[in-house]
Length: 114
Length: 112
Image 1 (cartoon, chains in turn cyan, green):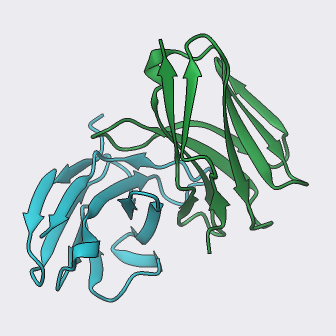
Image 2 (cartoon, helix red, strand yellow):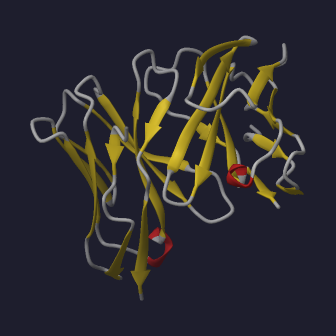
Image 3 (cartoon, chains in turn blue, green):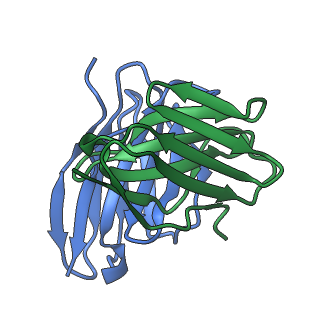
């Protein structure tokens, strides 16, 4: 079974631009979550989608948005990029209504904002 | 408000010795905890978990201990091996299990 796939793996943008990151979950997984990892901050929850619906959202500004498609693939978008948005963005998938909270992560998309 | 805290950003341990990674939490609603391991340029991978109805869970070289009264859990790795060098995150599912709250991580370095 293929794992969680994230594209692109690395990207460089400048302030004010916008970026779209893509995530393909493990086949059969309907829940997709996004996390931001920065040094010293650990993994910060961005949002979680299930069956194309956002079920939960973290404490991030409205510049951060996402969506999920009918095939469970998900995208997240960051508009008007700021230097502080430089981070590793991780996507994770899980089976529906996980009881254990176990997530399967992709390798991440490393965003650098100049 | 950091509900899950890992106060040691780094830890170095001699190969063959025991590694002990600590995690504290503040939310008494947490009733399940997980440890993830992360290598550079890879996503975190699930390592071991523990439910609040237990105070210990063991899986090979890895044991997690939970002290509910102290709101503290620890991960023991024995014996430590060079391949254990990674960043370790503790995490807890929030109500509804729709998200995990992670600690800030501890970078473990095993010295050969």
